[in-house]
Image 1 (cartoon, one colour):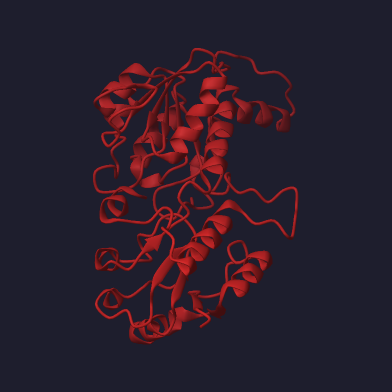
Image 2 (tube, helix red, strand yellow):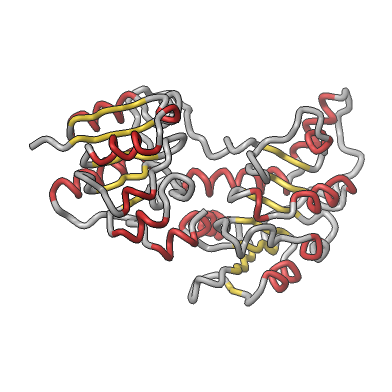
Amino acid sequence: MSKKLLHLASRKLRPDLFIDPFIKELQQLGELEIVTNAADLSEEMIADKIRDCHILLTGWDSANVPASIAGSPGRLEYICHVTGSVRGFIPIEVIRSGIPVTNWGPGQAYYVAEATFALLLACFKNLREHIEIKREGQWKLSHVERNGSLLNSKVGIYGFGVIARQFYKFCRVFGTDVTIYDPFVSESEPAQVDSLEELFEKCDTIVVMAGLNEKTRHSVTAELLAKLPDNGIIINTARGAIIDQEALFQELESGRLRAGLDVLDGNDELPEKHPARNYPNLILTAHQCPLSEWPPDPERLHPMHTVCLDNIQRHLKGEPLLYEMDEKRFHLST
């Protein structure tokens, strides 16, 4: 019997998620149904649709899975979350129920780590200020004390999951002195410290790569930022709410620190007139820096797609799933 695959898009189908070659591959694996504007359906109607499928595909902008599915799944066998964080889409009750849930695992790790490294290099080489003075009609910077090198620089990584481990590989090539802080990692190749305070005291650059949870929310405080040396650097490609954003903006407005932020507290946006948009020591990439759309290839599947397709095939064959979510991982993930 052919399995029924279902995706419930809150509004329009995300074209960057459900690309044509991905849809074609899914159609080879079962009967695919895509429902748009699911946000207009009641919770019970959504639950009924889910109970009538075998495999539910969730991801960016998909409808939330009702908690009632945990106790009454119907025909549902497996939830394949195509993207990263499942929180906000799949409730903890479903994870606890034993219904298998997977996500993209390390599928996008290279792209995010690469984007993080790009921001780091851009800050070290002070690229925004170089660009700005050319736009203003000048040519050379009047001061170059911000220009630095990754060679022997002291970079601290806050959080050491799969993305941070890929980022660390890049750092090794450049001879960077790396220290990490992650209370959930017992052993790692780079040196570890026992607290965020030690990390900020030891390093001149901090790269935030931790998951967002109640322990990490606003954990990068004004007091910690004050421990960084003048011209120190903050990079954040994790979640904006990990940093006390107003405290960071005060440091940036004073000119003391530099930052590369792919993410911001709240909805990853700043009002049009917000002064931080004009800080010469701040690079903002609007949660788009890790995207990889060039060179164009209409038939290319992204890693998140290949991980999803592999797991669906594993499920259909009765083989173990990769990157299955459990309660501990649910709480640690962003």
